[in-house]
Image: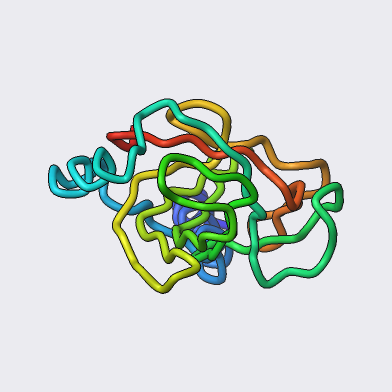
Length: 160
């Protein structure tokens, strides 16, 4: 092989490999980084203060008990509060976006649907502290994330 073709072949191979690895991976973008001032004010009226914590069922539709593990996918997730926090009672559904970043699973919840049908914007994160997140279990891949079904969440006034 002529020596001038070697760099071209390496560059072409690298480009092809990058394309194969990149296409087919689902990229989930995080929601906006800050809570709207109106949301923060509404959360105060709902007695939701930054730092308050509770527990939730990570996927409201997935069967199993609180001590079981579930498999989750990146993207939209609907969780169910297992414990009340502020004026959000147990059973409230919270909607957010789940994604994985360097082994840590993040969820930013932005909408709450109370059992009585009321809907409110919120700012909650998965995990026991801000900025949130949980480390995925062994065997997790970007398309099959293994986590406990029951997990902590934290009220925040800003997503970090």
